[in-house]
Length: 88
Image: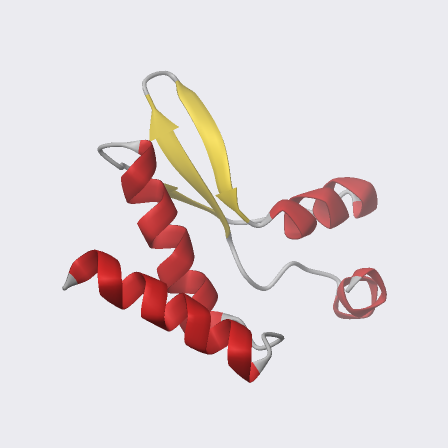
């Protein structure tokens, strides 16, 4: 990932944070954040307002199951099933 970002010269996907009171809590994009800091690049931040840590977890699981490309079929099925059991 580092070499890819170095070659492109920018972080394409935003970092996601939870606005909790007066602090920002990183909820997605740890690697993007570290690579951007290492290379001295600017990056986009998307702020989310969640009601609770459980809301954060559900949001993270929905992203894991739907958007990640590097999951095995078993992992993807697990996350989809877990998310489904929470929202049904």
